[in-house]
Length: 175
Image 1 (cartoon, helix red, strand yellow):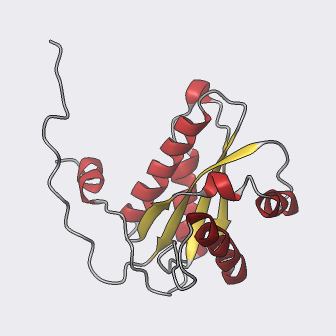
Image 2 (cartoon, rainbow, N blue to C red):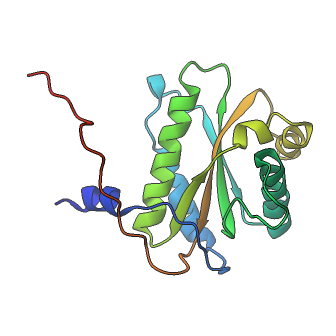
């Protein structure tokens, strides 16, 4: 099997992270993979926000926790010390698909580099709030953006989970 196919089959969503800081060099490699995701008409209209600042990470985590309706002691990012947030231009017809491809590339790149990742939802709701829009404005990001997802990122605390069996009857052939 090719190395790429092996990585696709062995990648898992990680829900337990060490508190170890992820080096910027690794984050930049993961971001680069995200920037090379396919996009409709090669418009490349998604952006990625890297969050390693603990105070900002916790601020976004708290927004996400409240939107999700979780108890005060729940961290929806599973303790991951870093996150990559993917946003896409709202007026692009393929923005959700394009952003989803970016997210997939981020997670595969993280796995290839020995890091764990997990797609965390509710980015759309976060960046529809006044607080979310202010975070973008503070970064100089203008325009209408939709949050596609957060890529929780960090070193795995424990073992990479074993794959679950694939559900049957999901492929059909027209030959």
